[in-house]
Every structure is written in C-alpha cells, then in structure tokens.
Length: 133
Image (cartoon, rainbow, N blue to C red; front, top):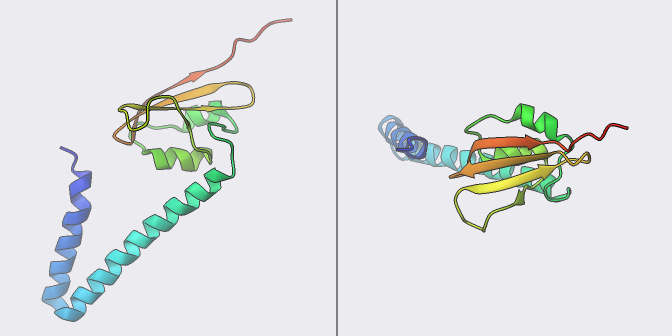
C-alpha cells in the first residue's frame, strides 16, 4: 500500500481536529487557511517548473551525462522536469504504464527514464559511439 497518499489527508484531518479542540471555529479557520496555503505553494511550484520547461525544446537537456548522474530512484516526474528544465519526449502511448520518457543533448547522448505511477524506477544512458580518426 502506498502510504504517501494517505499521510497528507490524515495529517490535515488531525491538524483540523486539534485546531477545533484548541480554538473552536477560529481554529477551523486557521486550519483551513494553512491547508489552502500549502496547496497554493505546491501549485505555484508546479506552474513555475512548467513555465520554465515551456521555453525549451521537448526532450532536450544540456548534458545527458550530468542528468544520468543526478537521477535517483523514486523521484517523481515533476522533479525530473525541474532538473532538466524540459519536458521529456514521451515514447509510450499516452496514459500507458509504465511511462517512458527520453532526453537528448547536443552530442546525441540519450537518457531514457521509466516512470511507474509517476515515480522513477529505472533509467539508462546511451552515448553515441566515438569514431576514431
């Protein structure tokens, strides 16, 4: 079971109950204000990341090797988009699981990332073969 989807709503309920017991209706207003602020912070971060990514070509990254070094298992797609400042090139059908995205740099090195449920599960770096003169 994925507990991360349960923790935030449970924390909101516990916070609201504690606010009610401490301050009655004023506590409910305080809890509601805190929850709305939390939601707005996450929404603002998402919009900022997507705004920066909209100015770059889809599937392009400055350095695929550096991206490969920075990736960690379990990070979400929004985190990877923030690191690359670019939307990945979707390689699978829309809404199909797992989702596979690629990012390419100017040297034609490619990082292929696999996301299951929005979380990074695996990635590979493919570098072009060097031709010796």
